[in-house]
Image (cartoon, rainbow, N blue to C red):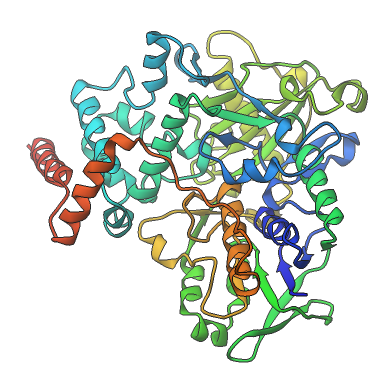
Amino acid sequence: MTRVAVIGGGIGGLTAAQELAERNIAVEVYEASDRFGGKARSYPVAQHGPLHGEHGFRFFPAFYRHVVETMERIPTAEGTVADNLVVTEETLVASTDQPAQRARTGQPESVREWMQTLRPAFIDDLPPEDRAFLLERFLYILTACDQRREHELDNVSWWEFIDADNRSEALRERLASATQALVALRPRLASARTMGVIYLQLLFGQMDPTRPAERILNGPTSEVWIRPWVEYLDSLDVELHASTPVERLLFDGRRITGAERTDGNRIEADEFVLAVPVHVAPSFVTPEIARAASELEGIERLDTAWMNGVQFYLSTDISLTRGHQVYTDSPWALTSISQRQFWSGHDFETTAPDDVEGVLSVIASDWETPGIVYGIPARACTRAEIATEVWEQLKAHLNATEDVLTDDVLVEWFLDPAIVETNDGVENRSPLLINTVGSLKHRPSAETSIENLTIAGDFVRTNSDLASMESANEAGRRAANAILRRHQPTTQAATIWELAEPAVFEPFRRHDRLQYRLGLPHPGEVTQSARSFVNRLGVRG
């Protein structure tokens, strides 16, 4: 029987293990930490027993197909893990200087709701010329062929692509940063290819009647997803080794001959799946491995950012909205979810301490901008200062017109343990890949040039593209498929989906493929150049 060793027990590694084990391939998973699930796992809060902390709340937009389909195959006592996904209903957009606004996240049912759905792309306070220009920019992306997206749009920043420096302040504040809070993209650094495509996917998800636009879990991640997943893999005879870090791969110049654990023991297998995070992967790529698989050399050139969560445990259940809260002008790009209202799959009433009635889970996506309390970025704060700063930024937004969040309801807080204090602030031991300009060429495919080595991290080239649970899951499927092609070529492969875009634009994309082959620019490029030139003349004048 073919033996596969998976190094890393996050979403990518567990996905590869499931796809292979379901096809009767022997799998062992080696995870360095004491629990599986990677960034998606929950942590017990020591001071309060059964409470859980998270790296950040789990968010499942409509275009997440791979990870949801995997969840549909993980059994629970009541059905499947996918049954633990619940639909959000609306997003609260809070500001410090005006009343909060609410936007539906479900399928639009009236003209008014359709207008509200489209509002992220056509914000009310934008000048008319900016609205028209943004429409042209999105049409550019929708009608650009894949080759142009990869070789041209990936080499332009989102900031430059939307001509942000020459547009209104409203555009820069509202649209340029629109996706940063959800997917840790930096508008000035992220490629136009990634940020434009993902922004459109989020928008299309609001309009697709076949799938919910947004879903979250009905309990702590490890309880309602990761634990049932590990139990299912165990039922498939997958050997799961927690607290078993692997130090290096052994390579004979042609294939991986084994892997060495930090305790000196050797792992033997026919195939090896490297499913470690992007900041860990370069330590496995020795000069010898890099010479044999040059596509792995670029991993160390990939950039990372911080996107970590803090949970506030409250004496009162403050539900806010049945969905996300977005804090538009928060220095640390905060988003949150009031979780108790969704946790029907978690026995909160009988397990939580008597003084805890609510959980507000917050993600901070900007760790470089000074805060409002200490005047320094999150990187330079202590853990306690980070919690205080986030809490004060929340209050500044939620209490703009009335007191919604007050100090007396705060019982305890929990900050992602990946944030570790140092002498000059904190370090992040679990950073996230960001799709910077030109980074696509440094991202490897799941199948490498080494005949028995595959990669299953969220930094792998995938249709999902973005560093996320979805991309990690797709990478795990691609790694499994490469192994299946070598050892079980007649076995049905794991399904891989393309990102769905409106078919009405396909003729335009075909035309642009011809334009690209002929070395001709996209029609929108001419418009962009002319508008930028005129705007710069106006600024200089």
